[in-house]
Length: 203
Image (cartoon, rainbow, N blue to C red; front, side, top):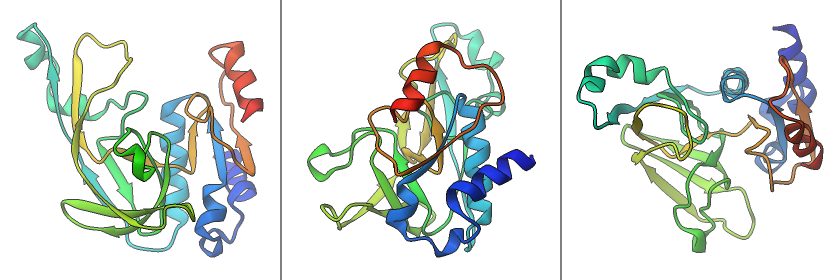
């Protein structure tokens, strides 16, 4: 959509590939739904230089109903991306700004919401560095088993994937408690609640 492209250029400029990592991490586009943030992150990554790498998750379910194992095959699970979960097909490039989705090691600054920059992409692991002068060291991520903490599904989704997502766009709820220098707001449908609008203007 033209509106989306204009918003991306307004926030990240036409010279996206010339922006410093620290500058990119201070910009964000907010949207009300997880689906829209996934789409916008893919659009931003497509504009970045470099070879894309797609990492696929392995998905399964936990359910007391044995019929669910047949009713919800992996192909169906691959299309699900609950809030707080990485997508089945995670597209990354070297230099992409990412955000952690779990508390991995708070003492080292690896907390839910921490921003990092991808430094290397490999078949079974990714490497990154925290976008902060306080924690300049590198970090290696392996795929781990993840499950959504709050989702309205008749089963528990288990996804083995890297615990991170691109951070150029995020949901309004996920942005709470974070500080940015430049923010774009995308609304293509009514907000779920008045609280979402309040949170948007507090970021």
